[in-house]
Amino acid sequence: MLKEFVAEEHALHDAKAKQAVQDFWIKHGYNCIENPDEYGVDLLVDGKDRKFGCEVETKIGWHGSDFSFPTLRIPFRKKKFTEDHVTFFVLNQGRTHAAVVNGKDLLKSPLVKVKNTMVPLGDYFFEVALSDVQFINLLAG
Image (cartoon, rainbow, N blue to C red; front, side):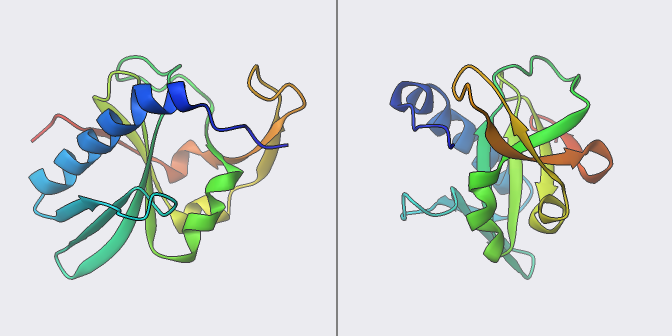
């Protein structure tokens, strides 16, 4: 069973999270635009002889800079974005830090079924080892 789309939750986090990551890429010398395809990967990034997509989400349970979870979980439904070169950014609630994983490392991660308040029967997630995750300060120069 997949989590249903919750418009209110999306509206609270989506635009600000995408803007924070877009600002990060631009600050580091890349061109970055929001994807005009609302069903595609969130951001389109190019520069420095590279072109890739960037999928962005917010982990509302992550506060501050320290990631206090044993693994990084990314919803299985995001697998559709791994057909191209895609980098996944999972932001803390304050949008100051991000856990970053590339599509190849995501795909080699095991799937786990996790019960939660949104999907009581459980939803599937890639469970990414923290050794495959890069943690970055989005505000650093």
